[in-house]
Length: 68
Image 1 (cartoon, rainbow, N blue to C red):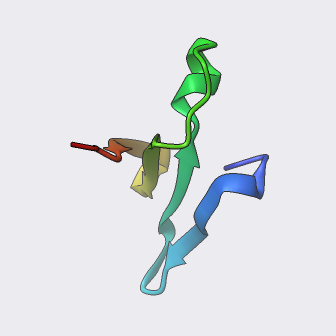
Image 2: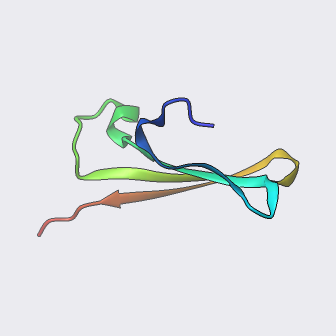
Image 3: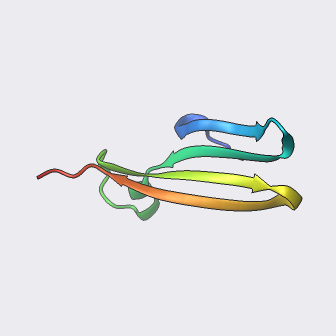
C-alpha cells in the first residue's frame, strides 16, 4: 500500500481472523503537500483500512503542537 516506508508507524497488518481485512498507519508532512514553509510542529496521521471485497476506508487526523 505504501511505496515509501519512511513515515510508516504501523506497516500493513492483516487481521488474524480474516486475511481480507487489514490496515496501515503513517504520517504525512502537510507542508510538503502544499509547498508551504516546512515546520515540525504538525503532521497528519493517516489510517487506511481494507475491508472485504476490496473496499477501503481512510481516516486522517491532524496533530499540532500548540504553544501559549
